[in-house]
Image 1 (cartoon, rainbow, N blue to C red):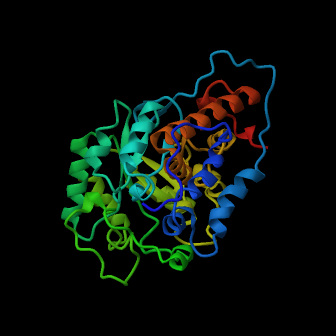
Image 2: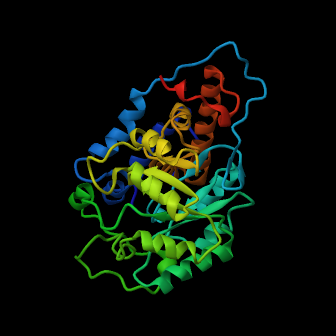
Length: 363
């Protein structure tokens, strides 16, 4: 890991919100690692739109209703969660901190946040699960070219105690990562896909240095059906944007959907996740829960997403930035800030229970 400054040992007062971790992370990462963390596909239009779409939404509060007894607790696929903020699957986090995903898992557990561990984690999934401390975790899955390899990952996740499988369906090939190309990004020695040990890496100079090892098989609906027959864990499909795909996910037996454009990292000019959410919510009509990934930076963003049909939200880049800036302390602090901001937003909009948010909370 190449950086300019060491990780913070305490949280300075100038870090008052999650976005404040971005410059702190930039000061501690070299150009290659930063290009991987911060960049989006193409011109970054989708990545930017994920944020601007949230900014364009306004909250419409109801007043004189009281806030006594307010709670952030939610129920999701049989899990009782302290709040609706989930750590998104993040690949190769040892690029940003020596402890990588294990540090994120420890921090998430400390603030009772569900974490989704990536197939491409730089720490074995078993080591991530060991940090759970009773807080549920899910495992994100990229289908492997050999179903036996895919099934091995599923069995390992089951044995380690993961409570759900998140199948990423929106990245059958690699996006155009121009920022990484300009920086000459390559994985440094010692940062590997720990869950795929023994797999032959792609030839040097060909393909993408991170994802080609995992994306040799583009998932199909038939693969979803096969996977559902292989495990009793609930299957969540990540990367759905179109309402017809949302309907098909319900028909196929998926237990939840993550409305996501991969953080703007696959195809540029996709719609913002928050803009696609209401159409997907209308399509599934409450049959399965929806989650939202992409652009969440504030507690007000969380509340907006829940009002438009999400049960919970996933947060990715800002968590990696907090990790780079201050290790597990930063991750726990960043997550805590989001939840605290959500509580403030609830109190100021007359919401006491996240299960009862009216659609017209968003103006």
